[in-house]
Length: 158
Image (cartoon, rainbow, N blue to C red):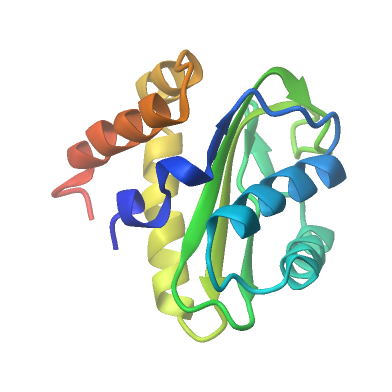
């Protein structure tokens, strides 16, 4: 499954306003729910994200956040991308604030697909040139085009 099919320009926000992880989850879920007809309820998504986050922080390294959860009633994997120049307090594993956040929402039953998507994301998020290029974008459409362009480099790596 292509990341460009999971993340759409409508669900990308440049200039996140949140100051901490709880606000961030609300900001990103609100964006998703408002742009996704037939979305599961906001509260169900937030609860699933917090439940997953309580197991281990998804603030992985170097200013990256990768919150993810399986959502009851979700029809297909979907996600939200957010960028923050200021950084967001996230209780990350390395203690640093996050600047780039990829929120992944998966169906409850497609565990294999969930893992494959996380693998694709991890390959991109380990590419410093992708992160640098992503961070300088100023619009949701530019972020999406950057994702599409770099995703093409993954062909043959999976």
